Amino acid sequence: MGIPQALTPLISRYLDLYIYHYMPSLWVHHFLREVERTTITCWSGGLRMVSVLGLGTSNIVNNRFLFSRFFLVLLTLGLTGCPRPAYVEAYNNTKTDLTINFSGLVRDVAPSQSLRFRFTGNSFQIKSDLGIWNYSRSIPHSGSDGPYFDGTLRVQINSDGHIYALRVKEMPPLSSFSEQPKGYPLRAN
Image (cartoon, rainbow, N blue to C red; front, side, top):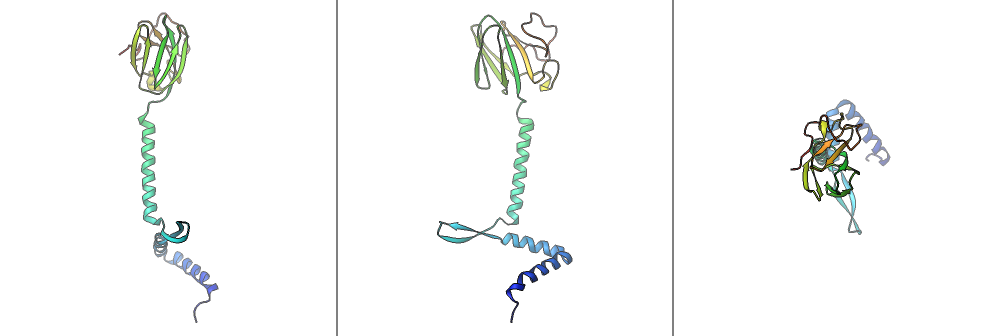
């Protein structure tokens, strides 16, 4: 005689609830096995339907594992791989135009003028009639806020090629510097 079609979902649901409450490990095993067998239907060539194996639990676990590793690598690179971007305000205290090459960008600064730029690289170069000067990146206080740095480093470029750091409240040009942070004045390489 058989079970009427209308009762099949009801009986299936009752059995699932029974298994869930009284035999949880069996229900979990049954659920995971069904997920592994899940198939999705997609169009193949636009003409006929083809059954394709679904994601399954092993692929889901692998995808989560790969995503977590990828995220961990990005986080590590973000925290340790790149220097903190800093703004630099460079005052030209020479009698000649300066061309500053930083992070692949080239900007000109007239005498007694300032140039503000975002500095993300590890080195920069200054060209002028006085010569070509190369410098390594040096942000006071390791990029933390302090008396010489508040997100913007103010510097003064002199004719001898030395670059002096200015305190946060100081305005260029200065003729003498009482003290300088570690690594300053910068000298050309």
